[in-house]
Length: 526
Image (cartoon, rainbow, N blue to C red; front, side, top):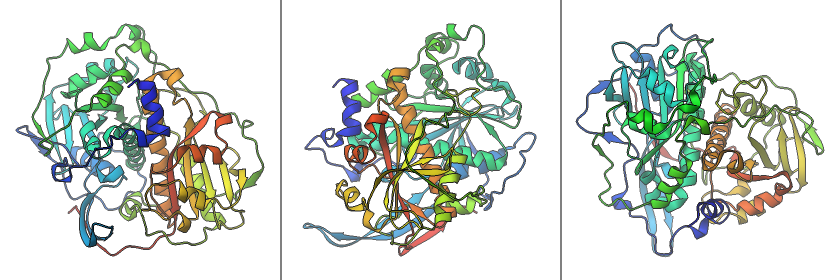
């Protein structure tokens, strides 16, 4: 299949991607985390803080603080047991569901992402994998790699002034075994919610962070010892406690850097790891997509940002009441967050709740990245639309949120819940019981014209980052949210009249009041 055709079907005709005879072999499912074998381990303290107020960073974060940061970002946080009612022609009764949850949502609870960390403290200097299952670091390489990491980023970051660099990767098989090639779309979104969570946690710890979507892929994989047939790094995020750290600088000679040349400067390494599956099926299309998205030379790095144009948004406006940024404990919000399915219950959302939700999501979203570089007020590449029902003081309808005016721009009046419900092929969420149903939208061409195939996965990541901001703000306001891709993209695009704006919907997020389902839940911490 041609890659352009694959991306089109991935977004608009997902039902055509899965073979008719494809069956999920649950008995051979992979673990939701990667386990390395036979390598030195560095235990991390399980006595994690249960509150995360905003604070100043230490002059040099120690291992304990880094461990707390990683746990709140992507650690195994809670163990839950719940009962699933079975009501199909072939099955009746109940099934006990057990899961180890993290603080971010993941499609099917599969958690395809992994975190790697380059620690730059003198004693611990080296490359590590964050072993979430045991809350520890596994050492993959020992030594100082400041120069290598800096050059892999095109010479645009003063890595030596950072105390750590985080690499966010996606493992293909952890999604493919259940979703087949649709896994490619999920991987970008999953990486995005992890990055969104990481940036929010970094703020609470007082860390400065910069997100690099562009880097020399082969060199980064070589450094970490990853097989490009199994896994790919999606983002590199250096961390610093220096507010004056140089980010995204244009360095002389950066364009001459190549991944192949950089790889020759460092011996290759590979390590045995365990995924549990005995029969890992081939996934050549995912490998081709990731190969097509790779950057082999710093010459291919570019910027794709523009200044915000406050006059660009038209349409009748419903101005929302002015609100301040939410003040909430991130650790408490993370522990409360879960994805309601049939647990939504109809209730009115107040005007102040809606205003606070949208304002907080929009104001918390801007972040330092290598696409916008030094723009003072960059225009976001993703936007937020929503269908509202019984929102206080606002007529039912489809709206676009205009953050510059803190207003809802009317697109189409009416109650659109039944239309949204009809667009879902599964009944795991009752949209008729949901007062707010948001859609994150972005460039209909998935940034391909500007950034090639890398643009697609960057777009999915930014959509996931915005979703995580909405979920955290929702929890602080007593609202639940369930991200899902089981919806009719074409119908939503028509509902919001997105085609003339050159946009398409990327993910659907029902939000509203919910009941707490009967379940057992315990925290995985000391």
